Length: 322
Length: 252
Image 1 (cartoon, rainbow over the protein chains, first blue to last red):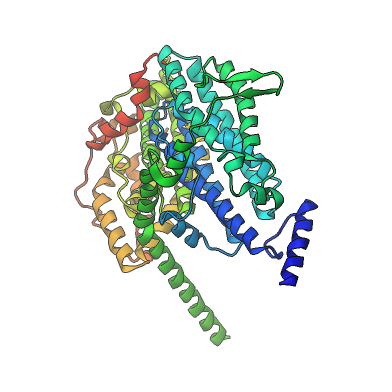
Image 2: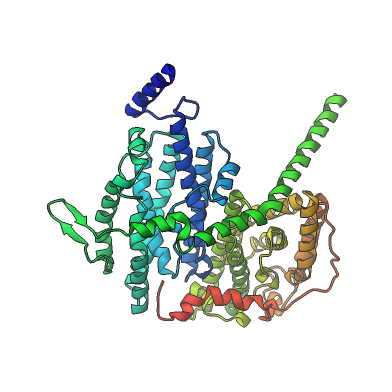
């Protein structure tokens, strides 16, 4: 007991000094569990997050935009891979993590439970959703767990590219025909508030924030990140000539920040709890891919075993011949 | 140049349609693959094919010299003007169906591009040389999957054999010589000259996969090169072309 306390003190001093925790280092069990939860949620978000955008790949309106979107969704899959690998360094397998997702025990970012209804959503998702994700992820590049921080550096580079691509779609639409501009405004109306919710509940209702800040997993609170996002994004909306769907939004000279209206946290908790517009469809799509892929994975495994056995047998022959 | 640019344009369009329609089909898998690594790998193939399609459409647009763009050609032509092979428009089915379709096409495309890389028409040889490198990888990827599924479990063996049998009737068209190919003699290979190499590749891979090769002389479905397609192409285009058709004045 006394030893455990002193190890925890040493761990705290270690992360306080901005050192990175590596897979083989001692860490409090709760830190390990928190990291598994957070990294796997992040990995699941990348993989489930492929679905709403993949929804428009076959309908992309030009060959160029089709290639960009396809490559983007593929990048999200790649991010899922790095993140599952980072989670595996904590002593859990990708299969276990996927089981947790499919059984509904693991969460993923709630934003992906909203539908993508028009091509403008490909712009809004890239610009706002990836934008909100980047705000969080830039902070995570300095997170205390080494493999997570390193995965995040690479992911951030690609995400900022995605965000520019999303904004480019919005610029084309906003400068296009009246129909296109209306499409852009409609997408902004639907994605604005869910994007603000992406930073999580307000600080006074966020149960994990204090411990995560102490362990330097998080470096900024939900509300700080949300404010930064609003401050950065409002001028971008103005540049597009669109309207933020918030009548309370105004610049507060004294604070040096934008004030914005109340967030509908009831909606947030309902969506997190499984009642969003697409929760069931998203999980069903993952479940179907998993089930339909079962015979394929089994075949690959069986073939690999046959290959290994054949190569072992041929090595035996060579040895006995020698 | 001894070949008519309108013929070269038509030829480029056929290749563009093949690669676009197959790329479009493969892109339907994105996010739904059997395992993340393979989802990513198949999307790579889709990206390469759509990239090749852009190259062919740009080439066709330049030869047509009628002001049309790559997107006009991809998004503003109706099904009967598409000149792709029937094989590439068939639905994805399960992973085995998709990979059997892919292997048939990749092996054909590989031997085709090998010849096109040597074309005296510079535009064609330049594109073919780049595409050849990509397609060498595609053909390896799909062949490995045929072998893995054929020589995997009893279930996968039965499934991939069924896929192969079902799709076989759509392979004959890959080697159909048309007037257009004959008019372009010397610039592009006659498709029938690719058949022996293709069949040899089938035999090699099927042997490793412990699969039976269907009868090479079986009755074959045709029509795609002449604009007579399966019922599937109309739906592919309805989906793919919807935005430019619904908003004809918009730029994207």
